[in-house]
Amino acid sequence: MSDTQNPVNPSTPVGPAKGYRRIATEEAWAPPELFRQYRKLLESRVVDDPGFNTMWSFYLGSPSDRARSIIEKIQDLGEQRIRDMDAAGIDVQLLMLTSPGVQVFDAPTAVSLARDSNDQLAEAVRRHPTRYAGMAAVAPQDPQAAAKELERGVRQLGFKGGVINDHTLGEYLDDPKFWPIFEAAEALDVPIYIHPNTPPKSMIGPFLESGLDGAIYGFAVETGLHALRLIVKGVFDRFPKLQIVLGHTGEALPFWLYRIDYMHRATVLSKRYESVKPLRRKPSEYLRENFYVTNSGVAWEPAIRFCQSVLGVDRVLYAMDYPYQFVADEVRTLDAMDMPDEDKKKFFQLNAERVFRL
Ligand code: 1DF
Ligand code: MN
Image 1 (cartoon, rainbow, N blue to C red):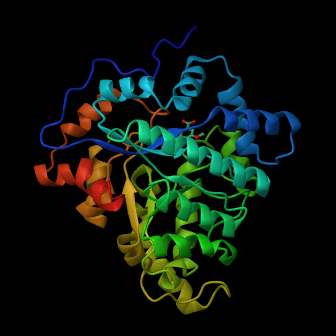
Image 2 (tube, rainbow, N blue to C red; image 1 turned 45 degrees about the vertical axis):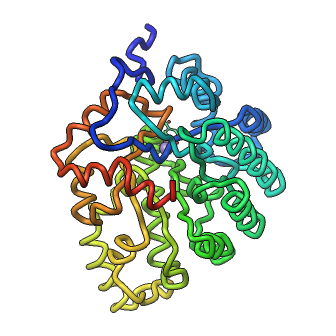
Image 3 (spheres, helix red, strand yellow; image 1 turned 45 degrees about the horizontal axis):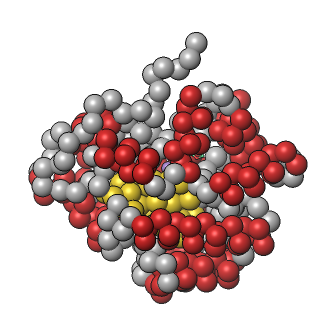
């Protein structure tokens, strides 16, 4: 049976919005060279990352309509993407290298692939300056090179920040060896988008068994964990101006805030863990002042409004998650949210313009 209900085809085109531009802020792309290198990794079995292996043997090997359509759309930075944007009523896409980006390669390969991808993305943005903006891909495997590439991306290529696709083969950005990247982001005054990836090998077992390792749930658990590690390990005491963007309504962290605050305080006071040090502020204060969240993949008014009520209407931004979740009806649903006009304009347009200096 063929999957005719192809989730990556919108139905009737969406018209222009009333009083705002629609800026989609977590939109994926990939150059053919990245997929050639992924294929090599899969064939040689050198990477011991079950999440990567299952995800990309599916997308690069499955004959399903979903896999084929996504692989085709994600590589296009030209007319096809713009036609899809027009059909779904998207004025601007903020583009970033798809997950896990270059973060599964050895350091030299990763550094060089990040550079090449950034050059290609910058070229596409130059061809379509009113429709595309970009985020710099970096290779955390070489933190100094990553900091430099972020700077080159922002200063020379006109990118709006950096994207890091979650853990790097099981390593998290709270490790001080990665902090040159945060130092650069703070100095350049640009945000880092922490985009999800599948849980690392040490965590993925029970997710994989039940088919929950990917965008359905594993992504959110894993990326929420990553963000929370940054908070409790004191990254924002060291880099108070650093701004992190999370997708998927903040990977559910806003929902957990009350309990996290309560239990973090209890944990610190009881001195239960050597590694848990007092912070200058409550975890919730960092989430409110050092994070933006987008609604990528969550076209659901209650969740979006909850984020707005917890973080403030200035910290919640629109994203589609093209081409993984390309559904024109979702744009209609969000246009129709019961929300003051000025808040809706912040959601779709003004927050993105401010945070990413568009
Ligand atoms: C999927 C979704 C895969 C997203 C992704 O990267 C990804 C998916 C491989 O649905 O399998 O980035 N996403 O952001 O929605
Ligand atoms: Mn995404």
